[in-house]
Image 1 (tube, rainbow, N blue to C red):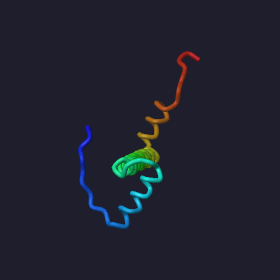
Image 2: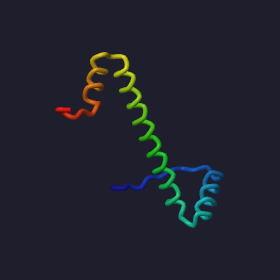
Image 3: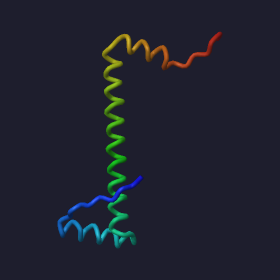
Amino acid sequence: MSAPISIRLDDQVRAELEAEARARRIGLATLLREIASDAARQVRRKRIREQTAAVGRYVASHPEAKEFFEFWGTPRIEGL
């Protein structure tokens, strides 16, 4: 569900964004939604990468975690 927000822009920033919106033939609100969506996606990806790196560091520094991942992370075919 979306909700409207209000932001205050400097005149120069607004003029630049309006020019970009005109160049893309979209409205200013649409351009701002695209910019915000892209930024949110980048933030989410960065957070996931940081969390993945933290797990990797933990596994590398704890023998029990490393053993767990070596056992469960390696595909095996039973009976061969």
